Length: 86
Image (cartoon, rainbow, N blue to C red):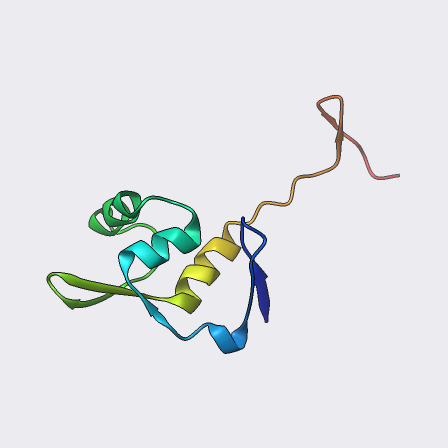
């Protein structure tokens, strides 16, 4: 399985088993660490591992899956209108 992120970085299954800290996970998603911390507090965003009250890790596979699940493929449009299949 290979995933492609916003920065066109490709990841294959052999690189997906690392535990990332908040800064690393946020960097992989292209967001600020504060955003990821806010999501965690609200219990939204990617799954995380709470090792202790002050130690949080994110499985790289979870971060990549979270990003890939939010991938949007736009439909073909011309001048703001959707083209009907012919």
